Length: 244
Ligand code: BTN
Image 1 (cartoon, helix red, strand yellow):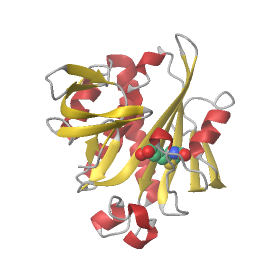
Image 2 (image 1 turned 90 degrees about the vertical axis):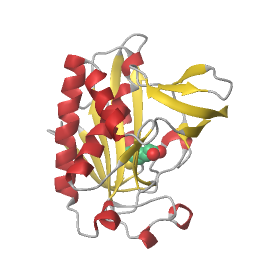
Image 3 (image 1 turned 90 degrees about the horizontal axis):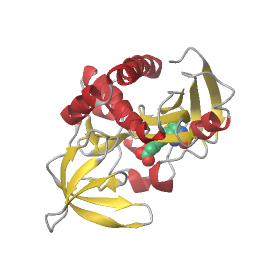
Image 4 (image 1 turned 45 degrees about the vertical axis):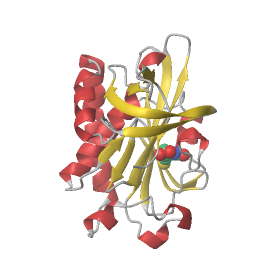
């Protein structure tokens, strides 16, 4: 990954760029921006991408897999980034499916988008945004209580280039492992890093009523095994858990 890098000083969104030019670039191309004017988050939200403070990056992958496997990639990315953070001494936890939190505050978000035909993925764009250099006052007021950055946590300078290299190396390792051995090894690691399992949570969903219940386990396909208050057990494939 990262043999080809497309760099923008300022762009609408690296995910949008990667999607629009997915067919023109090889697998492993990285789209990187110093600033995004229309950074996008999950569930149709925007993502604050202040110039020079973070890593705003999208990775283009072209695995020849059935689209049903796409949900495993954001989980894999969360594991790669969580492990990189741990190596820096940052105890990051994964909130299902793929938010990274430190002390309950969001430090990294992941947005995966796919182009597919009926039975084959054409491309996957894995976008991640990492808050690196922000001080508290750099965040928009409305997210100051729920967001943090690596430098706020570590109280020392972090080199964004080195950090991105470390993450891409891990992402590459786990990507090839997934293609070779399937999802199970990644699933084990995800369970080591998560703070979601075993807790009563609320899951907000796009255009649907929220669910309340207990997060029991991560299923082999990446969905969440969930117990409703009446004891019924269901699989939840997408949604967002409230910050605990
Ligand atoms: C979320 O937590 O809601 C996901 C946030 C993903 C943000 C990244 S920044 C790089 C890439 N480009 C985007 O527009 N979004 C992702």
